[in-house]
Image 1 (spheres, rainbow, N blue to C red):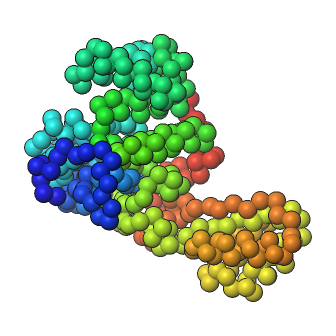
Image 2: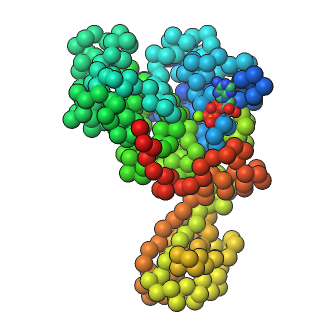
Image 3: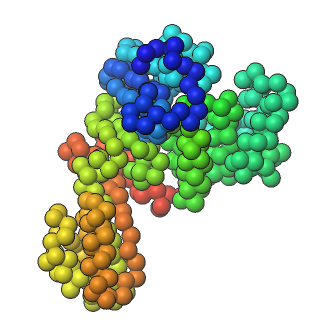
Length: 349
Ligand SMILES: Nc1ncnc2c1ncn2[C@@H]1O[C@H](COP(=O)(O)OP(=O)(O)O)[C@@H](O)[C@H]1O
Ligand SMILES: [Mg+2]
């Protein structure tokens, strides 16, 4: 990073193969009393990409986001966002970032529209511009119908969308999303993913924290895995998935009697080159570990060729626990909710 002189960054800055860093973190350390929340974190996020920071509760994700958004000072190490130093240039930095926290930051008593208008005014927009921006973002996040209702009447998903809208008011070039879908039901979570993807399409750089491998896969191109304040793995999503054993293909034949012959056939084919297939009797399905799209195609091809009627074929990602187990040899350190996101229910608010 050459320093502050290279900025302001331009949108849609097409920078194939490498590109500049929107976020650079070096040796970041933060204690809370005895607790070492960050223990020497290094991180690079290239402009226009989505970096997923994956880790269990207590890993230090929020602490990292708070430091990068200047809400918290590090003990040592340093970090720049959009070329601005988090400690020495907080004002400039705040002008180019957006932040959506794990907990809604909107004022519940105020209607959605008022929330956005107020933030626009705080960001020095004229009345006219703040009004226009509030209208535009409510429309964009499908909240126009609820614009005049207090945010306290919104569902969890609507609030999360209002939060995202609020973080976009200042047209940030770098967006921090701290567990944007934790506690949301699957449908709402998908909506939030769509919104985030649209923002990325606009050229915004995103640093997203999550406890879900599935979310990281949906949104991020690169991943940093953190545990106990330390980076324990990093790289491209595919690379990391390969490291932790790829994914599992779940094949459910319409007739459960086909299970064993199917398993035998796949093992004989030796397509996977991995651990052998297992039968999940409870759900009447066959679990096939796969490492690549080619293997996926080969397995599906072999199953289809046999002429068996298949009730469903789905792929599953390893859970965070499994990821941690294969990367570190131990389970994620803090107690956490390890149920897949599908089985989570929306938190009542
Ligand atoms: N304000 C605070 N005071 C004391 N300890 C804290 C505070 N905030 C976080 N911690 C501790 O720091 C560690 C990292 O927390 P956090 O950054 O919130 O992790 P995550 O967001 O990954 O769940 C945890 O052990 C947490 O208990
Ligand atoms: Mg957190």
